[in-house]
Length: 182
Image (tube, rainbow, N blue to C red; front, side):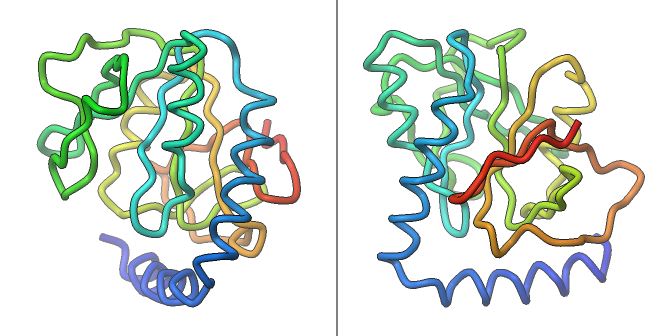
């Protein structure tokens, strides 16, 4: 793991933890509203927010209630991840790393219309600092045709170190704006 990124990740995690819960809820709600306005009607690949990540469960449940396609990650070993379709958030159980995951029997979504990417911080150009496992960089590299959108708080939109294997998202949504990164 890149030592510079690891140090920055620790610093930003500490900063993120200092954001009061009430402020997080308000910001997450604003991000979800802005995100909902830019997502396509087709199946969308969502992460299920945990820890420092922007909450996504509400928008996942809203889309499911409207009969829209939703898939979520099922993580394998060595940074591998597949998009698995769900019909209810009740299907999710703690999986690898304690994150909510669908069962292994959930159907694979071969080509979602969009992917919502988690990140602790993003650059204005669409690069991100995530958990450090490389799952989303590998997924985006294998699926360059899928529209990818990242979520972060405005204060975590900043210059970041970028490695050759890092992949950009096409847009970043914050509580204040939608930023096109193309």
